[in-house]
Image (cartoon, rainbow, N blue to C red; front, side):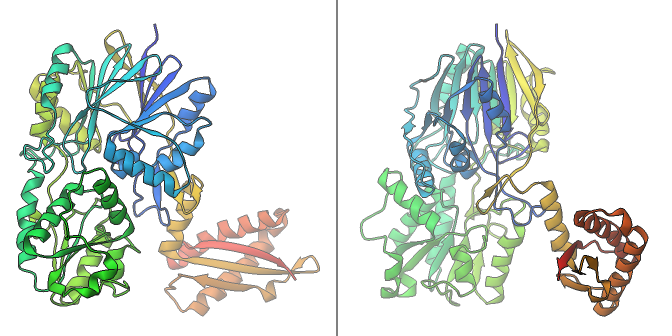
Length: 555
């Protein structure tokens, strides 16, 4: 009898790039396909996507992808689809909730991918191939239509519980389906994967509905334009701002491609209620007084080039931020993104603009993730044989074991915390590590996918920190003329006078080539020799390691 293999390609030990494979016999079911965000050690990288090398190795062996199930419409769960789908010879069947389908369709249309995406109906199982059925159930989160997935397999029921919270007062009235959770638990669950991101918080996560009154109060006290920036997928937050604007007699304009698109999709699907006469076209804002306007603008993380940042620096055609205006950040900073986020806030503050953000007003943002209390409640309802924390970093996984499962009496070996790149096998009611695969960082840089590897990133870091030196060596009639060599530097701040360092480089170049140049048989050998030895000699003098690029030019 075969085993069920669980292969995390992302979302294990990290918050983003969520992608999981469930394998049985010759079939593979994919759950989620999200992007990640580069850190400060990845200069020039736009996005991270899951490494699908293992997946395609399995396909090459004769296995087939029977489908993709997407849990919800956040980028870290579905944003990699435009990059991953073109890799398949045959487009897999995709299922998601209505709003998530809307978001995905728009993303795929933008890159010219045409495929039909099917819509989950809660509690109605969908057959994937011979071995898998998937059923969705409603949970609350910071984007509407978020689902947990119940996967029936030959080795039992797997509960795939990604991002959620237990909001008792959701904006759209759709609560987490705890009744079905209990029914599933009573029938028996082999393994439950549970969102652990907010496990360090021991108090119940506050309801999203508690944000609305504060947003309204801030709007009421605004003399000029009320400018608010938030996550463009946070339709419930947008709904509360719209409601406040309606109540206080302000017109609402949406600015920024992402928020404009998502609002249209949500309105078309009846997920966002827009009262008559409230929304105006951004091009018509000049027809209203500032105190009559509420502007929702994209760029809540201070992203370079976003509508908010262009407005902050006075470069936006439609939005000019004036002293009587109020700018509200209704989004927490994403870890690792602190520099651009606070740079935007500082720029506004330095210009005398009233700016409110979650650090000074905690009611501006409520998390979409369950605390340890809620995680414990869900595990108690499901009472699976095995539990595996997902969607958090390593510290969250460790605390989940301490705060959640151990407190519920789970013994050693029944809370699964596999190592990075480890594959779990489920067979006959038991779970063990059965394999270890290679998962490498996969980058998107402009139009390039996966072509920015460790060496390129190392070079970029060196250039950003210590600059670059280009050593130009002319070759005349087949011989290097070192008397005519030139040194060009970029981004290199010399400790001594620049001329002294350039003279040092030229002198060392002559010495290196006189001593070891005959060992170099090709231009590449010469370049490698100079790069290696000049780097060492320069570091001894200036304690810096710039990128050194020797170039031989035939004159």
